[in-house]
Image (tube, rainbow over all chains, first blue to last red; front, side, top):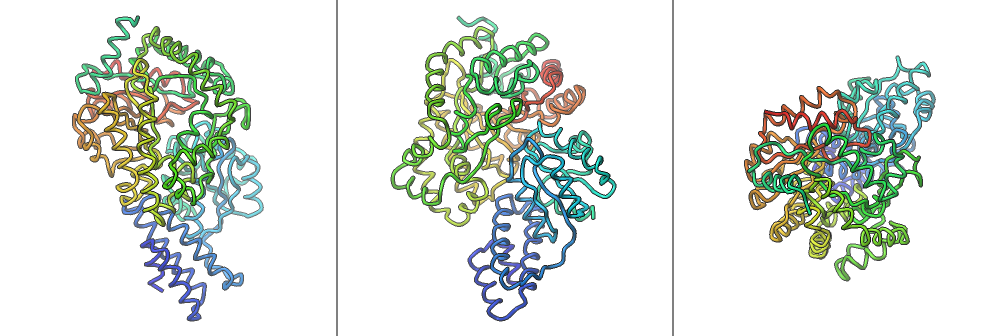
Length: 205
Length: 375
């Protein structure tokens, strides 16, 4: 099984898919294969944090992890791995950019989180409803425009108005976000990249 | 006839690139920043070239009345973003007052309009075959032709307007190298996958596209407006792609574009979004004192100056969040510290990438005041 995590961490797509098929043919528990894939993604994340991998590598590994998941899905029969927690994720109102959000989605998902993606240009009430329905303790807000800072603030205020602020930690991310934007919007933390989003979400649980 | 002040400022641009400037050069960049401050709705600003030009000029002059702006980063020609940017990224734009609320900023809609089989078409038939097919899907062709006609009829008049206001520009042209065009057309995630799965094919497509890309770039430059051009580095940033992809698919196109500019006696301005620290020393491959790196605050300029010395001028890099939410003191401290650390020679002070649409006017003033007051 170490081979699967190694192949994923080394971004060897064809060899990985062959190895997964071989494990399935050998009757290996698909959940174990999935866990090996998750372990590979953890290695990818570590290499990214160390500066050895770059965003394109994260995207490639995310695509590979997704394909492994699709290959395993018919065999999992509803079984899921360990879920660390739930996160509501989306790009805030007035901003239609999705690349950063989608990358965070795949990194959180492969990091063991159940992610509720509400899409782009999402109004504050969309986030609030998703938090209420899912009971998620984490809210991740993405933006690429500085003009979307007020949408982040409005979303934070809507979470407060709904009486959820004490139970929900809010992380922001995207090109023009930093600690000053955390202060400006009333969020709790900022993630510099997709991998740090995973780390911060784990710390916040 | 240009004024003495215009000539002095135009000379200061050249001197700064050559590291002969006596003081820091202040450089305006703010594609969308003027609208809100001047009380103009974004839809009018973005969709009407005359409104964009007048509003921008009034805004710049308002700053200029308080503290001097030596030059513009890019000449302002009033080109509608939804007619110009699709050329660079093969992507459609959503516009204020059309698909977006009246005061919203225009936004790029990235989809995979370019299909995997298009690489073969580019290799076999040339990029024009694909581009001509896609263009009508990206822009309204009537609007596009109207935009071209506007430039033909008003282009020189608008250039003269800025000359008469003593505002030379560093750049008047730009190129989006083939890597960036393909990335926009395929969408970032799909294109990055392609780079891992079919690098040979992408490399061939880039080789086919590059001569035309360079030719178009040189054709867009109007030396009267600005004697340089941007070479775009957006999705090809060191922080975004692996070294293997960067060395093979990104840098060759950027370097060839920069060299072509310099061979034709133009300034090569590498407009770099995101962090380029990993590969910053590669800019030493560009002839010394002929080029600029124009960064957005994510590249470490202290490190860049240390590595590049007096070979490549720096244009940067006051962060967008700071201009949008910071105080004037914070902005001034940022600028003063930057000049303290990397020195005034070969330095243009300007917003990182572009001043955001919600940049505070007082912060724009503070940015230039700090540069002009630095001793």
